[in-house]
Image (cartoon, rainbow, N blue to C red; front, side):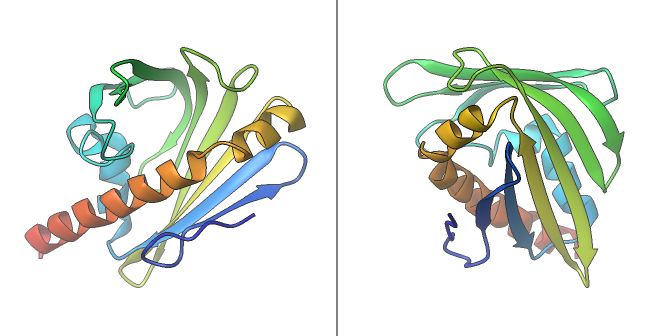
Length: 167
């Protein structure tokens, strides 16, 4: 079950009984990709589809700190998610819980973002661990893969601007 973005290397697949793994390589150094994951002013510019702008982005990036993100939907409603950071290794790894205001899968998930630098590029691997196989399989049936692919395309565009400014 793979989906490919316009840049050609976005992958999403089931792994084990309860995980989804997504990977994408960005043409930017690891510290810039990490900054886009860690700074609200940057995250608001790329996370979510273009049709659903982020209305709220709060990040307390430390173990035990919380985050809260809310998007405005085209239907006029909102979609919110929050969680608690469990582990932070700057420029390398972020682990946090994830729970949506209006759950579309049971319980909460654990999201691990791992960054690996490769010659000026960065490989981002996102692993989401769900409480059940049914929850994971339900998420795989949603259009989530297209939303993530679009978000990563937007991140790629932001990183191109950021990388150019830092050269």
